[in-house]
Length: 514
Image (cartoon, rainbow, N blue to C red; front, side, top):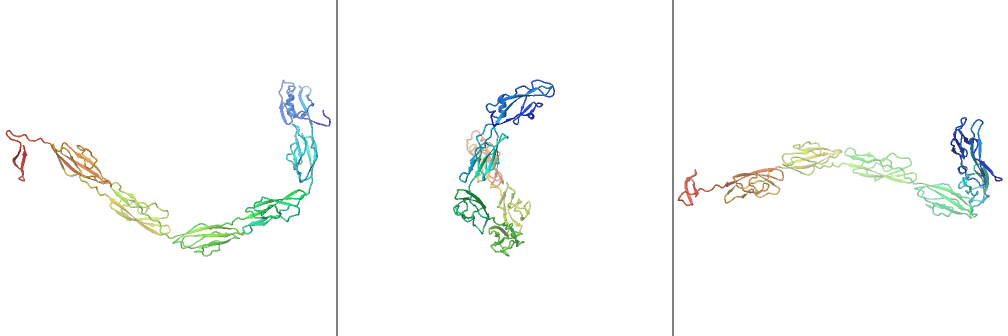
């Protein structure tokens, strides 16, 4: 053991709980293993359950030369319990007293720490860390600090603070608004002192006692005063900036028409505010919060509100004057034919409008915006639209009905014989028309205007023409085919033209070539 040294034995009677088979060392619970069962309720424990290294870890650093030893506890009639114990020294030294000044405002106290020791300093004010062996001390006044090691040993050190601090006075807080936009802060300079203000924002200077301040937002300024002895003092002043504009609300936009000719604009007045409206046209007053407006045309009014802090704000409200006839559009003219037999007229309905069509002939309805029209002849329809303001407007749309069939001509009848075996039928094609011939027998094509026909027997062909309007027309042409062989000559006759002495009923002679 060392002289003049306090030792701390960490294991005591209350720290051993044999029933729970555990030992509490330094706040850590260590479990034991039973070796056999003895008499009574307590279990047997192995001897020397803690090795020196395990015990040292629990106790912290074991000073050189200090023993570790074993004690045996037990009661008569019970199996003894053996526990390994250790001790350690409690060394404390708060260090030398320290003297601080304005030029030397902080210093280190204490002595180097010992591994495994715990340190606690009081009071904590002015210390960088009260739980380490050597904290940095920077108290504002002379202070005696007490160091406690391992919760047992104590020592003290005094930190003396020397020096006279200068007077610092940043002045009273100030208020700026839209009328007062700058102010002087600080107080009169004292000879020998120097001044430094921060932040610099909004200041006319940062190194004088009384700068002019004009910040745009509320700002707290700190002045640091340095005396001739190097000591410093600080103070703060807040410059409150109230440039909040007043509440302004010109109200909801309003609508006037032939029925409603005037309305109130603006909102309820706020005490302390003043009001100014422009333009004045159509207003009963320009200096009140809620004037009556009756303009003859749509007008946007601007209200300017001035608050008690001199700040202003503006808002606008539009008074719409609607004496305009409603929009009307009967739509584009439409065409009907044999393919398209109905169409929609008009345009998309506008909310609040009502519709009336005339004449109603050929319409699916006469009171909607877009009726279906299917007239049998070309018809002009008139739509009358009535707006929500009671005004009306009209427009017309013409539905042209084109059901004229296309021009058709299958051509003249044609004759074929043994010499002329084919011929062209039909007539020149007309642009936009399509053609269909039947029957197809003997035709080189059935879908052209002038196919070549070469039937083997007399055939009547029908052509169907479809115009661009979908309408159709038909015509026929006959191709006569005469391929009868000639009559053979009687004996002694020569081929030639002979009169057969037959007459038709019109007394026309008939000749035959033999």
